[in-house]
Each structure stands twice: as C-alpha cells, then as structure tokens.
Image 1 (spheres, rainbow, N blue to C red):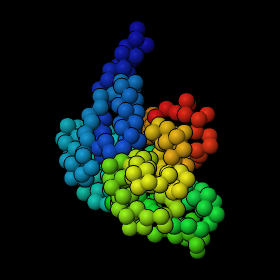
Image 2: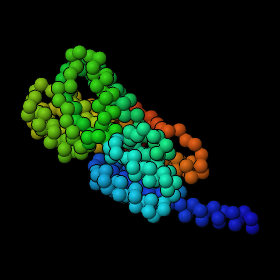
Image 3: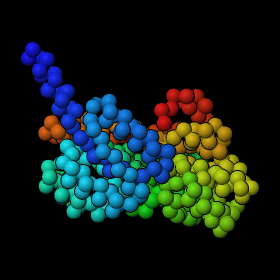
Image 4: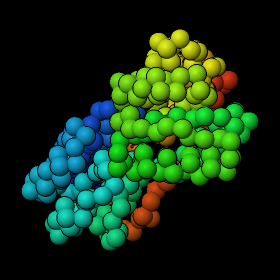
Length: 304
Ligand code: GYE
C-alpha cells in the first residue's frame, strides 16, 4: 500500500509540473527540430509545457516570461534571441524562485545567478572548425563572403568570431563582405544576390552561419550562372537534412553539426534545478564537421 501511495503521489507530482518555453520563432529547420524535441521530451516526462513563439522579437520573449511567472510555472526554458537586455526580466524570475534554463543561445549578464544553466553548443568552436576546413580547401588563399545570423544573437556573434580568428591566420585569405542573412533561406538568397552583383566572379567561397542561408545562397549562385560547390565553395553550420541533400547534389561542400535535439538535456537540467541540485553553468553539446564526400553514407542516420 505504501508503495502504491508513494507511486501515486510521485506521478501526481510529475503531472503537476509545468514548464514555460520561450522560443524564438521558426526561422530555420534547425529551430523547428529544437521545438519538436522540447515538446516531445515534455510529453515523455509527463510535464505540462506552455509554449510561446516570439516571432524573432525579444520584447515578445520578455512578455512570455512575465506571463509564465504570473502563471506560477515551475521552471522556464528560454532560447534567447539576442545576447543582451535580459537582466530585468531574469531578476523577476529569480525573485519568484523560478529557475531559468537557457537553451541553444547564450546571454551576456554580469550576474550569472540570474539563470540556472545553459544547454548549448560552442559557437566559437563551430566557427573555428568552419574556418579551418575552408582554409585548407582554398589552400590558404581566396575571397570569402559571409552570411551572418541575426544581429545580436550569440550564435551569430560567436560563429563570426571563431571563423575570423582562423581566417586571420592566413594573410591571403580574406573576408571581402559580411552581412546579416537573418538565419533564413529567403534572406540568405537575397544577400547572396547582392554579393554576386558587387563581386561577381571574384568570390571563391561562402561561409553561412546556418544551413538555411547556405541553401538560399546556392539558389542565388545557380541563378547567377555559376556552379555552387565548384566555382564557389560553401560551408555552413547546423547539419540539417536539407544540407545533406545539398551535399549529395554536390552544391554544398561541408556543414558543421550543431545538434538541435536539446529536449532530453534541457529537461535533465529542469529536474536538477527542481531537486535543488547544483549544475555546471554550461552543458556543452559537442559538434563535428560533415563533408560532401561522406554525405551519402551518413544521410540515412540523420535524425533532423
Ligand atoms: O544554428 C540557426 C538558428 O541558435 C543555434 O539559430 C541556434 C541557431 C541555428 O535559427 O539555424
């Protein structure tokens, strides 16, 4: 009987746990995969998930967090669209004793007690990996154009930083243009069209902060009458299905993996927080690079 009552109480407790997820939006296939992973994991663990899509706006995310606090959720998962401007709302969450778990992107705050932990990839590492591959592929020289992720996002800031660090080691390897492509396919295509107009046949390679922008750029290169993957080499970040298809077609040369299936890790942190345990400030997702040469063998095992 004791065990039965205990089990009942325990499952009741799990049932009663509510988590608010302040998501950025649905700009890329990466983000759609992340949303799905978090929703699935909440369901698997029997939690109630309150989901908010901020349509790329920080003010909407702040509103969502305030509404989660008002509803008395047990924990908040936040994918912060930009790095700065979070102190105030996070202080409100802290005051309400609601732990905040950051997923996928980071924030810049002086007081790191404002969040419980961050589950994310190391974007500087990803940028360095992309830069080293490109330096080698171009034999240390050439002209590169860069498609940046949304302005102010840690994923854009750090992917640029890591990439530039490596490229700067090669005096004849230069980033001749860099512009915001908002992490979307449409904007990636648009920016690439402008790059091609301005620099035409002078471009040797494209570095895109995510696959969706690279896929847009591939279209722009084809429309311009050049051959993506040959005349212009392309490397991006994420390793979503579409990137594998583009590699198999020969259009994309390489992609650095950034795993969006953060649900299980994020909810492990939620549970640690609710149990009052300590966690490291950053749970790092490890990344690797995938090349066009191996895409055919790898594609079947891809989960997103
Ligand atoms: O790479 C990109 C997206 O924050 C890591 O955001 C994430 C990035 C991801 O939209 O595709």
